[in-house]
Image (cartoon, rainbow, N blue to C red; front, top):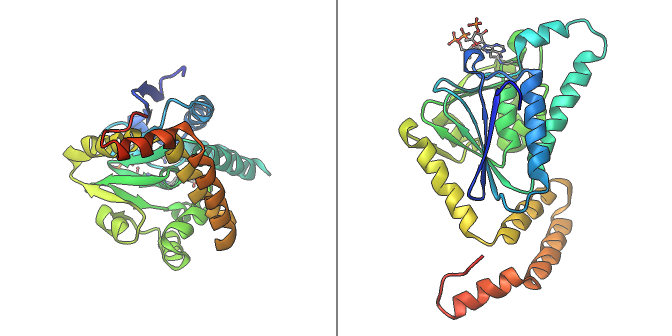
Length: 259
Ligand code: CAA
């Protein structure tokens, strides 16, 4: 990770990816996006790491969007804009499909590509000072890293249209009210609270946790019936694993399970 613009660290079944361009409010330039992609490559086959926490450095900003100075270079370059959008969307898709549970820890601005990054994580934990917006229309653009799709899925299309076409900035409590974020906590508690959630996850049976994510995500591309069939199949697969043998025995023997 040459310029150190993304810090990547692994500690006790958890990985931490922190974007580190505080002077540009952690804007996503091509180097940052490449490093996020490289981190996803490291994580995708890793069975030890169960949780990934994504954050931005400094107090002010999670990520203030794609790097607008780089976008200027793409102006009028035929298909370069479309290619750039597709490239970023593919990286966020890799992040979304990681086997780990991914948490966006948002302490400040999550704007444009920054909100799109948070939306590609499984859920968002925000500080009370976090601010959310997809302001691309103020630049003559629309969200380009799948924000039109993921925001609509998360908060419904009527709200997503209003958010995107007004470019309004929303507070953490407003984001909580519409289901964009799972929790809002005091700024000074954000790191500890996110750790507590991560610790709860890593205490549970790892294969079951990974399978739960996979099966819930399958519902996006399937009918209710197909989703239930996928659930039953995986429930059966898990019942044949040593992990569930241990979990069930531990309950019956009244002792903590050892996963
Ligand atoms: N790209 C590049 N640089 C950015 C940036 C961005 N998205 N956001 C902030 N910066 C830079 C500023 O240029 C400034 O750098 P200099 O000191 O070198 O001038 C530095 O970060 C600090 O920013 P400000 O001086 O603007 O700080 P502020 O407190 O006055 O305002 C802000 C903060 C409201 C977040 C404001 O910076 C802002 O509106 N940023 C842009 C937000 C935005 O439009 N994001 C969408 C980008 S497009 C996109 O993301 C497309 C997509 O979907 C893929």
